Amino acid sequence: MHPRTAIRHALVAHLGQPVPGIAPPGYRTAAKENVFSKRSASLPAGVLPLLIVSTDEDKREAGDPANGGGPLRRQLTVMVEGSAAGEGAGNAVDALSLEVEDAVFADPTLGGLLESLRWEKTVIEGDGEDAGLTARMTFSAVYHSHLPPEGGPPLPTRVYGSWEPNVGSPHLPDYREMSDGRPPEVV
Image (cartoon, rainbow, N blue to C red; front, side):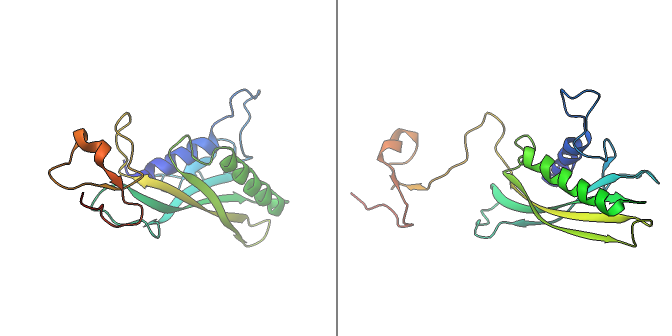
């Protein structure tokens, strides 16, 4: 499964599932369980309020080197559309926006799936309260692709260098950190 798919599914589940410990089943938003992925085969007709989660631009974060298929720090645009209609729709989409922002703030990593999920902007669209209004909320998700398997070695955080033939795990104490980008001196 591509990380974008996993992120959409995780956000739909986070926004649409009852909050544990609140009786009767309490939800994070007024949309309750009416939270869907835009890529769903069928969206219900006439069910409001509702939330629709989608993803857009997915790019390598600026400054992260393309390293031949290894882990990349990526930035994904995630959209959540909150729709309401009828009298008070303006207040309803404002309330939905706040509820979604609060839900994201409560778990900005979606259970460890992301490095972060931050709100960027909200745009209100529609033909008026009776016809319906939609709040299009844009979030920025930062995640890493091609992570090592769980329980595997951690990702490197520093670059070290050594000269042949003194390479490999027996010579790790001889390695010197290359913090300034220059190779180590030959001794």
